[in-house]
Image (tube, rainbow, N blue to C red; front, side):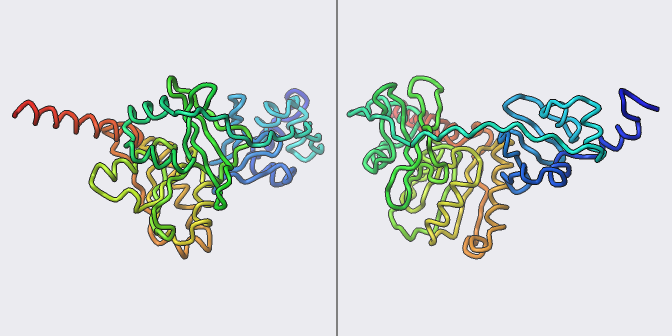
Amino acid sequence: MVVSGVTKAQIAKAKEWDLLSYLQTYEPQELKRCGPREYCTRTHDSLKISNGKWCWNSRGIGGRTALDYLLKVRGMDFVDAVETLCGCRAPPPQERHPPQPRKPFALPEARRFPAAVVAYLQDRGIHPELIGACLQAGTLYESRKHQNCVFVGRDPTGRARFACLRGTRDGFRLDVEGSDKRYNFALPAYAPDCPQLAVAESPIDALSVATLVKLAGGDWQGSHYLSLGGTGPRALLQFLRDHPYVTQVSLCLDSDRAGLEGMERLEQVVREDMELSRRVKLIHRNPPPAVHGKDYNEFLCAYVKAARGRERQREGAR
């Protein structure tokens, strides 16, 4: 039987192709690995392929089969797409757009007195000692134009390579254009040969972990703290390569699904690296207690609130 110019047998055969197998067979130049078990396409880097499915995140569409991809992404008509997958017709060339020139990275202009940043971070529970250390190191300052927190990431030579903005009056978040996410915000240990590293998703979460160590009576300078800017592995891998004494990693990502899956991926990426897997002896998954929220800053705020409540009770009993 013929349906719309192709037979039902041809349609069934076409639907057997998953997108990853199709691209590996017909267009291997389009595939780019972006995770341990995840790919994207070079033409559309927001189109992710994993677990037998694909999703074009920027367009909000997805599917399972290569037929879905040819129809929804490539814009082919049904008959042409089926015949392509049956080997009757070579796939048409992808429409390529010339790459846009990348804007050079530049730090936003700084405000002389970071009053808004200091007040904002203290309100989030971050200890003044840590805020002062970051301001002195030049990894934190206040932008002149909008009074945003500017968290700066530097390479081993001290050169600024990354910056992210966080609003002090709203939920604004943005990475500065041209930032290299391999060099994300970090709070280094006092000793360069320190073996311990704590990893969080955001700068504020990294500072929250360090603050909790200090409030518990520990030495917060006895560990490095690193922000990933999400859950991806680039900053972690770069930091481990730049700090050859690190042998213990505490993964302090959020206690939601993205964070828990992210910790699993990060551990796998380190274990799959031949040099790092020999050196890094301990990787501990250490999400915050979910009862206090999803991230370490929410945990810190709950901790500080409870401590203040206990202090008020003691004062009332005097």
